[in-house]
Image 1: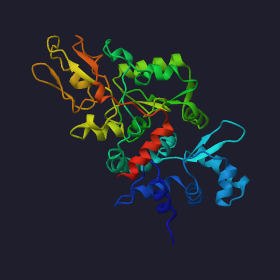
Image 2: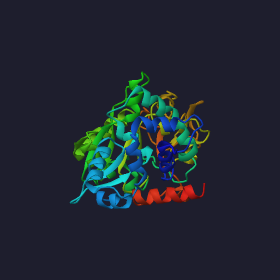
Image 3: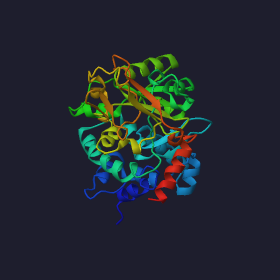
Image 4: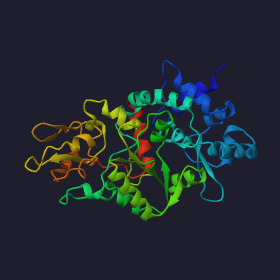
Length: 352
């Protein structure tokens, strides 16, 4: 007899971000905690293309009314994604990350947290780090960038926020789940922005609250003062911005273990030190999430480790550290849309 959860795991692994198998089977334990067998079977019949319940029912040969009710329940449980625009809602399958895992912000359990924390480093190693196109990139806040730099609209968080019509702020699932098992930090919890259809989904599912642009910019500044790394979705028009810390964020934690994290991060900036102005206080050393700065006679930045987040800039009392734009040949231009990002990731998977 075929294991429905093994089928579901293989199905999720066909999506751009992947859901790779393990020797321990932890990926199956996670799915059994989240999906009933019926819900797993329904998800097997779905893709990452938004569709009406009628279209999905016709393909799966299910009763439309019964399936519609089930899809609403599943989207409310964070198992699939729902778009509420138009006369009829649209439904699509979700990737595990970024997706299903983040949608369980409000119903975490110690057992689920333990399984996911065991599994996420495996996803990072087997999928995230191997893909040329990442789901996230790193950007600074404008005041951290040297004034002589040309700043493109998609490179600065303030610009991304001002261009949104719908903004929802949510708690950071990484910090929340770490706190639940006694390993969290005291950085701000409200630290994840969702935009557009993602924002409506988060609001309707009780995963966050709607805010205006002014409040969003104030929260952004709170994250800056806390030294959080800004990671928007890897698109010029992203659906989210996460404000991350190196102690809880699975992406940053795993990047930090690499010898040269700068080589696998989409970023257009790097930190530099004016030796004549550096007083050797080590504030930047303590602030860096990638251990990219060491102190010799003055602070020294390792370009192979610097991800250009700029969190070192505001803590320097003498202004000795600046965030500089990479050479034109090293500039990264993100895909125009999230859809294009996923298409690029899918092509990357074909070449793995």
